[in-house]
Image 1 (cartoon, rainbow, N blue to C red):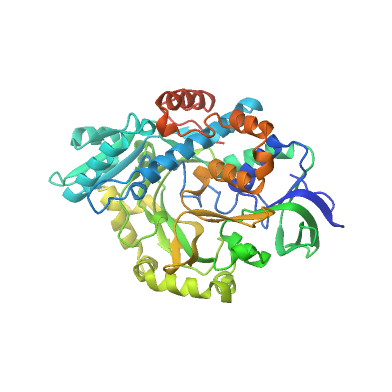
Image 2: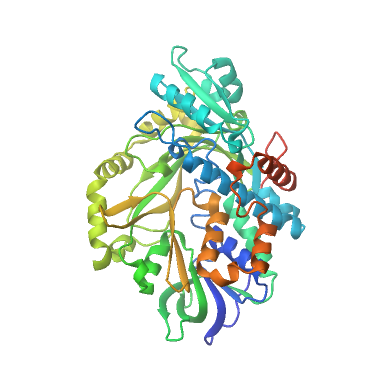
Length: 507
């Protein structure tokens, strides 16, 4: 990927800050909708997808709500709220449709290899948790999006689904699991780089790496002036754009605040870091072929839901357990310890203090996680892998997440665990904040952003037709259309090569 001349200010239609999955998705969509648009991508590191989108940093490897128990909370009356799970499952189907569209249109067979078939399981133990999982299964399978989800309390069946999880387990322990065989594993780093490769082949697209955005200012004519500093040479890059998207992961919040738009007032961030235990024994890795998710500890953030996770990373099968949460004041893995203190302004100080006071259990949880010894982390692993051996696992540092803190009329300030798009009233600038489910629902998030920031164009027959071409279920609730669910899954499964029982190499 190459950059164009930096010596003078360049006028563009669109500037995308951050070379991650969100910018890649938005850039490809906008180019499909309006091919003549001029686009520049500005990234502070020297490669794309090296922060939150990187496979080692991203916990969202195909979040489709098949196995994530925190997406289906139990209500006060004991019933299961499936609304969030259904929404996320629908959004993930939209993502697969867009990826299939790109793979088919551009005849890029390798583009489909970032995604692999891998069963998604939820696993619990104890009477209370088993009752919850049973009710969850009954509630979810009312939706066509969860058709085919298996449920079992039979130990022989569970042994077939996840042998390493069951071997050596106390026979008196009450256990249960659900299994969605059509689950997937997604390498979002590979996907991001693949989409940027397609984008760079298009006219009027430029990439500027190793450039840290230092200034965002709206001009009198409504355009935005962006200044960036080359981290190697110190040279200044000057860009002017009609629309700016800030998709810089944890780095989005400081840039949004610096933009000065009224809509950014009151937003703050709470950084959470992560770690994995990575298996280094090939024999163990080969014997586990699933994503097995459990229940999060009380007070823990969603990104800390424990899971024993089969991945395909850089063409190699990997097995991870975690993530273990931690705390740092950095907003990015390769950020600065000053990120958090510098993000505190008069406009967001009150919401941040109130949210902090209301989330003391979370603070205690993070402190406990930071204080964990290697033996403590291994003890958590043995709950899921009873016969695990200490020497088969090593610590791997994961990525950074910045949870959203925002103003709330009633509460004063609240800590959010989802993703949020913050946009100027005129639609000239937008930023994506937050984490889970993040990358897995990037397509749906970017469609919503386009409709919000390009409202007139989005309503035209031409753009509406293109949306339907890129995402056949656009504008339709798949939950309410069982036949369409089957048709779309057949299409995406065929194009993305998801029919195989064994994961293929992801390159």
